[in-house]
Length: 347
Ligand code: NAP
Ligand code: ZN
Picture 1: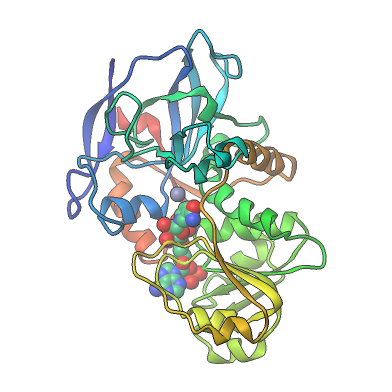
Picture 2 (picture 1 turned 30 degrees about the vertical axis):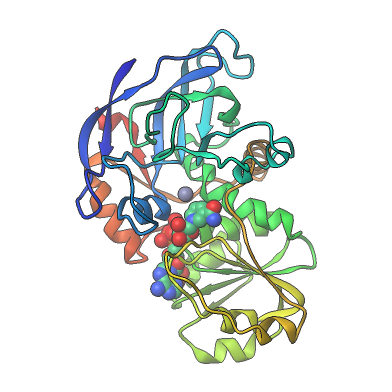
């Protein structure tokens, strides 16, 4: 057992504070990672605030982890001491069900083990990446290719894979019109990745405040959803809409922007139910779908794709003591476009 520095939420309504936590011994299939960078995902905020249900406090969030291997178990072959690696939203799954065997560990029939707030194999609660070290089964650890700045790579472990996976699944590519709703952490990655996949990309943001950024990130078009004309002008246009918004949206209004056979995929995960008028679907054979992160092999594929296309997140590097302030800024849609914590400041 190893005692390490971390930042934890003591309870739902309280700010995160410094603490010490225990990491399990490195088993034969595990690696010990010295964390260098940890991204702040809006899911961390939904979770620690208890918006998705009760949590096992104190809870250390963080599922966008990049660091280097400092110890590896006897049975580990894929990661060596000194390798730069990443860990995303899950650290284990059954490995045997049909979904795990298909490489969709995130849809494990037994439930994937979340990087924090999950039930670890030793019966303890998993604790996430706002910390100096973590011990993870090597099968859930991916390689961070050289050529991506490690701090800018951290957000790829959640924001990157969460947008890459549906863009691939619904075939974003040349000749396809893709809209991204919400230009935050996930949204800005969706724009970069869809652009690299050569789709025609449109940003649908609440206002035009981030228009210049959106176009720089790779969007071809940018519209404000606060302008009701937007929904008339763009009606029936898109093959795929990726909704990354952390709050409830008017689903019917966005479905109206889809072409025949188009799909609106929700990756945003607001706690409250969203309503749907089925006529928004049946009038143009449209689909309304959801997607959660991506599998481990797909996460590696995404990292390799990002390295090849020179894609990292646009980040603001902060120290541990700025976490609570960063949460407030994320909640105010004032993130450009991902906060990443320098893990050296947890000590
Ligand atoms: P984020 O950085 O806060 O971005 C969300 C963006 O949504 C904001 O920047 C804002 O963009 C827009 N937005 C926020 N409030 C809004 C409102 N009331 N109405 C309309 N638009 C609003 O969050 P994130 O880290 O990208 O995460 C986004 C959501 O995805 C969260 O719910 C998170 O839990 C979820 N998530 C899901 C998965 C998955 O696997 N499915 C993985 C990670 C995260 P504009 O200012 O441009 O409008
Ligand atoms: Zn996340």
